Image (cartoon, rainbow, N blue to C red; front, side, top):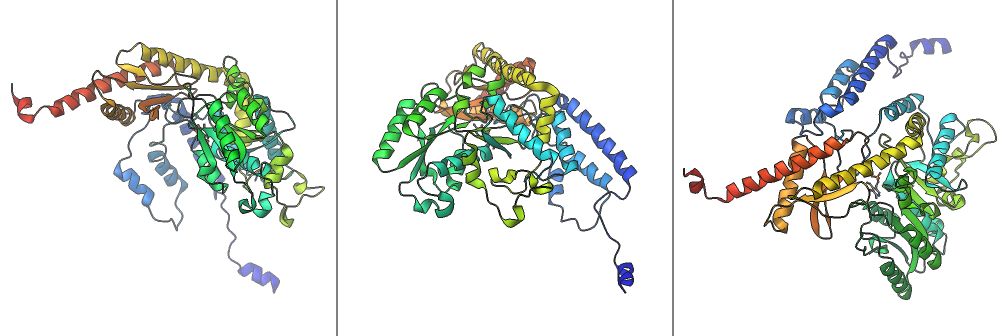
Length: 504
Ligand SMILES: Cc1ncc(COP(=O)(O)O)c(C=O)c1O
C-alpha cells in the first residue's frame, strides 16, 4: 500500500539545473562577459537614457511557464547590463557611492552559492562575519571588547547606533514600556549638515523629527560647539532630556568633519551618548595622509561606517559598532524557543541577529573579507588618500579657470563648484548649472550631482572611486566650461526676437 502510493506520486522537482554541463557552459559565458564588462567600463557612457522598448520589457507579466536560461541571460545583457546607474564608471561622482570591485563581486557570488544565513549558528561564515566586524573595529581604533554588526548600509548602521543610544539614555526600560512611559522627552543633536537618514531614524524610533535638533554649523560647516552647548542647556531648562550627540565625520554636502574631540568632551560632561556618523569619513583612519582628520573617533560610544563606500564593497554593506557590547545586545536580543542556543551542534554559535533588527541576514562578510585579504588595508588607505589628492587637483583646476568658481572649501574628497559667467544672477546660475549637470549625464560624459551650500546652489563631485584618473577630472572641467558656454549662448539666442535672428 505504502509502496504503491509512492510510485503514484508526481515526479519530485528541484530548482537545480537539469543539465549541469549546459549550466557550466553558460556560467563560463557569464563570467567571460562580466570580466570584459568591467575591463571595458571606461569605454562606455557613464549613463544613458533607456529607450521606450527597453523600459517596456520591465512591465512584462508574471512568468508562469519556464523559459530557457539562455534567453533570460540575453535579456539581462540587453537591459540591465546596458543601462546601469553608472557608479562603477571612473567618471561617476554623484551623491556618495563606492565603485565596487571584481573580487567583491566574486565574493557575492560565492556567498550566494554557499548560501548561509547569518542570523547566527556555528559555521564558518558566522565566524567570518564576526572577523570582519573585528577588522572594522581595528581599522578605526575601537577596543576589541566593543561589539558590532554588518548591516545593509550607513542608514541602517546609524539606526542601530541611535537605537542603543535611545535605550541607554532613557530612564525607563523603553523596550518594555515604550516611549510613552518616558517622563522627559529625549533630545538628539546634530549639525544642520546631518545626513537625511538620521531624520528617518528618529522618526522610526518614535522620537519624532522635532526630537532631533539641527544645530547651526560654523564657517567650516562643522557643528558649532557653542551653539550645541546652548541648545542642550535650553532643552534641559525646558524639561527635555538631552540624550545623544550625532557627530558627522564627513558630511554628505561638503565632507566637513565635526570636532570629534570637543564633542567627546562635551558629551561626557553632559552625560550624553556620542554617536559618530562615519559613513563617509570613518575609514580615513586607515589613510596615512588623512587619518589625523578623524582622531577621536575611537572614543565614540557608537560609530556607523560604510564598507560599500571607501572599501568599495558591492552594495550592500554597512557596519555599526558599539563600544558597550552589553548595551548593544540589550537593545535587540530576543530569545524565542526556536532561536535558543544549544551546547553543541549548529545552534551552539552566537546568534548574530541579536545585534540588529534582521533575523535572517545575508552573508555580507565574504565580499569585504576577500577584497581586504587580496589588497590589504594599506592599499585601501592609499586609495583614500588618492581620492583626496584628486579632489585637491580638481579644486586647483577650478581655481585656475576664470569661468569656474569654488563654492565651498574642499575638505576631503567632495568638490563644490559652479560655472559662473559674468552678470548671471543666482536664479540664472542655478538654471545654467543644473543644465550642465543634466547634459553631462545625458551625454554620458560624467555623473555629478548638485547641492546648496550656505544658500548657494552648486555642482558637487564626490570622488569616492578607485578608477578615477586625473585626466577624468580634466575632462570634467573642460566639458563643464564647454557646456556652460553653449547654454549661455543658447539662452542669449532665445532672448533675441525671431525677426532679428533672421536678419542678415
Ligand atoms: C554622511 C552619510 N551618512 C549616512 C549615509 C547613508 O548611507 P547608506 O546610503 O549606505 O545607507 C550617507 C550616504 O551617502 C552619508 O553620506
